[in-house]
Image 1 (cartoon, rainbow, N blue to C red):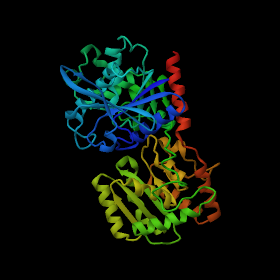
Image 2 (image 1 turned 60 degrees about the horizontal axis):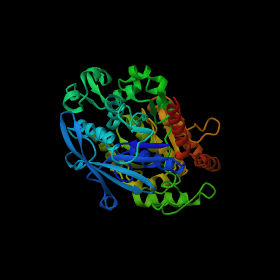
Image 3 (image 1 turned 120 degrees about the horizontal axis):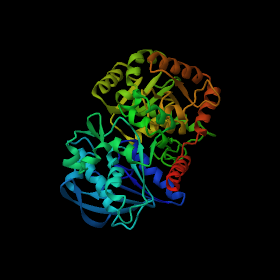
Image 4 (image 1 turned 90 degrees about the horizontal axis):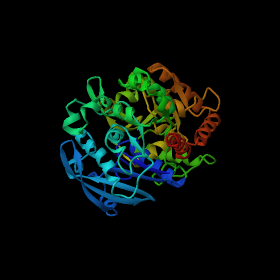
Length: 472
């Protein structure tokens, strides 16, 4: 099968979050299973020079952005056996950063139209175009309006993967004619609640809608989670499916991790104590018999930081130390700074994202806290289990699908149901109690490490979905 993954970011070229990990890992799994899967992203300024050296120019073309014609360069590179295409336009993409610009709508209108135009010149017509989030949501819209009946395009199927429904590409109605070039008789595809909603357009025109966990697929039918799109999604349930993301098990491997001081495995856990001691040294944490809770997170409301703020003093009283890495809203950054100052030696906070340190936190912590208000999939809980670091999570989205409470059968972590600080505190207390029973805790660590969250099973489910729509 021929698959084109269209995304706004992909490891190793450009990354700001979990989307890049998915786009970097899933195509590799498809290719390993004998399919021809390729990736297309914008040619950002931030792509490192050593990766640019291997790019070759395929073609210079022009792309319609409503009434404008814009330059588009098509570049190509092969990395780890995967073919990547890059859409070049320095006005749109030669900037510091990936998103957050006043003209993001225009930038990704251009990109989406360019992806479809590119197919005429690269000698590759995919069976499936798998789009990802709002930045590529106009691809199925443009396909249904302009390309479906063009020679060579007629048999392409479109899939949209929703990684986080909160981000939808909502803009004023003037963008329909001024930027998108969508005829007014097709405006209904994008019109929603008085705005142009790009993600809604993909929901309307895609052959399948995939979310990044089974639980998230039904959660987004509820107004609490859907950020306004529940009304349209309820009518499209017949093409909605949830598939749990995987993780890169080569990058996150406690037996081979180049960023940790000692390797270990589920049959020999002795190296984990060495990693814990080294983490204390690195972060200035007191050495004691008590547990370390790790957190690698964005500091935003839906990550559940408010619950932590409510009971932080109580957590310290339990003898817990914290190793925290992340950045986000200023009020949360200020809170964690204050806690690190108040509880010196018990709380370490590193603002920003340091990939090497994240590996050492996964390896050196005993527990990993994710009290999310909502979590489409979450990768950190899977990574932590890979390192024998027991997750404590709220039962939502992919956290519900991947973590089973230790109080039940074959538990691999600790969970709580309601978005309540005291319920979270109770789950942590249960974890601390089991932690004090060392043989029981070691069995729990090994059960967590036994879990297989590689991309293989997820890739098979994606292929099932692709085959469903190709067979119709």
